[in-house]
Image 1: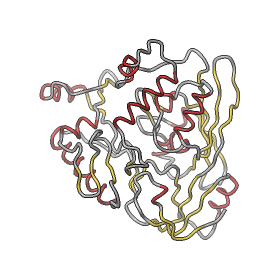
Image 2: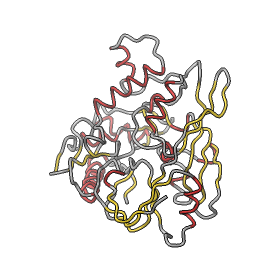
Image 3: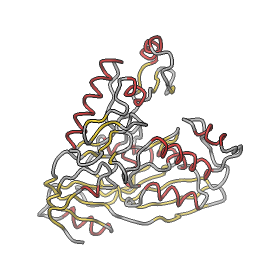
Length: 337
């Protein structure tokens, strides 16, 4: 373990924002993590995972601690289920592919989501009708105060839409070190009715899809709509899809006949933020080195050398415009730092 000085964080955030870390350390075992948390010279720390859910707007004068814990293992299994543990530094999509190679089902719809396993529970990541909580069994997290490991079960995590205890009352108090999943080995519960998965399978004349087929369809759809962070800096979906009352939706539907929607409950409806942003005229809008992606209005992009504040100010303009046009508040999904 080596603490470095004045390190660019450009390679460590998917937006590709070039800010400096005054101090930087990469952690690949829990003992070193405990040592760093106890270090008397670095009282303030920024915990960094895959860097996929953040927008850096300034240099970081704290100790940036990169969680690079690796490892995937099968804890137990029977004829129907496998209990699988993945450490926080594992790339999420590579973990999905590992599960598919072993024919473990449940997370195939979340293929190609950027980021690492350790940050997945914080957001309760999700895509195409599936969320992390659907297969989540527990996670281990290191207490920043007591420097001891605690296990959180699903109920304790208080999962909500792109939300969890780690974004609320436990924010900044724990560092997730591993996540354990309960995955199917047979009788997989297939979810193909969200988005265009079904139509993609139909195009390929796949009538009895496997979990691998669903993953390939999701990857095809995402790659056709979303820019690869390796090519264009971005953080995936910048905004959450807003949930509004059915009464408000009924009013909007009279004005916008084809407004897409997904029922959340008898009284609430989810409206795609991307549709709202596109209708507000921002899809494909480019301002110098940054803008809104031409194929997916949910994605703000850094075309090269943009500053974090540039993207932040654009996001605020989008929020203000959507609120004015639709009376809907859309929240940022990424963390602004």
